[in-house]
Length: 184
Image 1 (tube, rainbow, N blue to C red):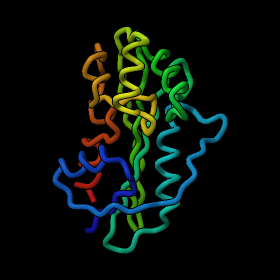
Image 2 (image 1 turned 45 degrees about the vertical axis):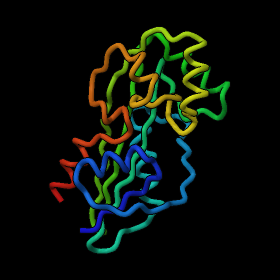
Image 3 (image 1 turned 90 degrees about the vertical axis):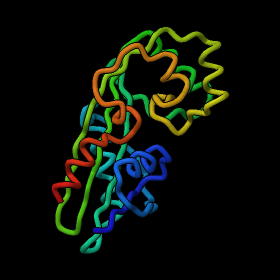
Image 4 (image 1 turned 30 degrees about the vertical axis):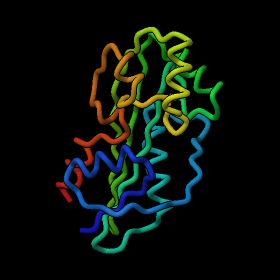
């Protein structure tokens, strides 16, 4: 089967390659808007499925993979920051606290569709304003939910504890992807 990855994320490409899969990256046009009253636990799955639906139906012999990651704290979703001030606010909110990271995947064939969400908890140490400024200027986390990447400096220097998959936090629950792809 031909695997299609509908993601421009370099992290997802790296992780899928690391699993040993050959794949082709495809581009989709999808406005990622959540319904107003969606439960946080369902949000990443909703967006992943929305992306799969925007692609349409894969041809026989093709398998489409889409994914989405959200960060949540205090019963609210922190999306991707719009600008530097937004990123600073998000990182100050996460500093010294525990938050949840939900990454959902959708795997779609011409006749089947699977959507599954994995959740991990992350506890940050305190983060000073100078450290936040350094991280934002050096790593430009504007394409990342919650304004950070676990694989970058902030993750290495400030994560005290995690409960769940590192790869879910990074943006692709590799164990879930492997399990479903192996089944189909």
